[in-house]
Image (tube, rainbow, N blue to C red; front, side, top):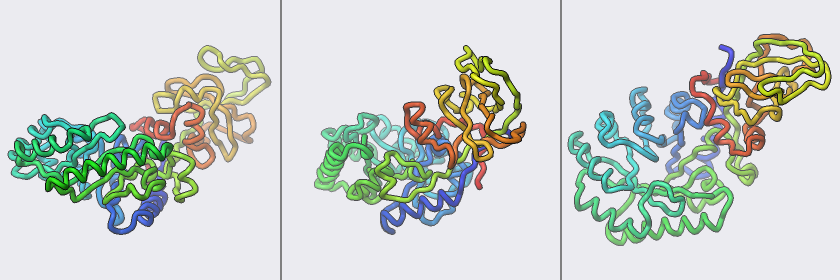
Length: 367
């Protein structure tokens, strides 16, 4: 194994404890492990959360992810956040298991109700309200009619919860307050008509920390679970530990003279004799091409710059400053010395993208 990801289980447990202390014992703590757990390993993180008594439910993006958890004997309750096919063959099994489905169209409601009848169960749903992110969700002024229609036509639907999603809770306090107000206005209108929701959730990691009034009866902790922050403001509010480190191995070391072009299109030329290391990682693995000639890795405690363009499966590193470097030496791509935030700044993106796009085929090891 030349390239691998290490996940620090202690860091995950620490971050869970931090959020539990923040929200108190009564609010549901619901880690978001969608999209390969933001690159950290779907089943690996699911198992860590499943055995943690502080975790109440697990949030996934799709029925496919929920089914994977069921097949792997994950016992915590599961909530699907985004999409599913009600006619999928696995839907009956999910309903029997008590999986919660997001509801935001009447077509979904009709199909889910029919499948629920087939399964002999009422289908648990959480009504999704679009309070301003303009993604999936029922518009606020249509929510009452929507719920009343579902209750009248589809008896196998049970509204266990209601929820929404902030568009910019890490950066825009005014917009966050506006969305929170809309969310609560919708709930108030529905409750005045006798509709009660045992579970109400809107807060993500950023909102949970920066806007505690939005915690509701449950919080969805995504990025924060992994010890990463959506904004610098959070660093002063909560102590989180990054859980992911990414390593690879040098496969060749060579000495090159001055004036040698490196990589495709020769985008870097050595200005003096240099020692180069070749590593078996490229943009196929999720090591972004935008890191070319800008990013650095760490070898034996020394930061070493990337030279030339990142290839599909290879990259070149200047290791001139590393004493006695040889093929087989370990290389840190992400970790304490080179952070996901640093790489995100280089690529003009967010830390979410840096970690979530690491190739899922790379082994994740719980350390």
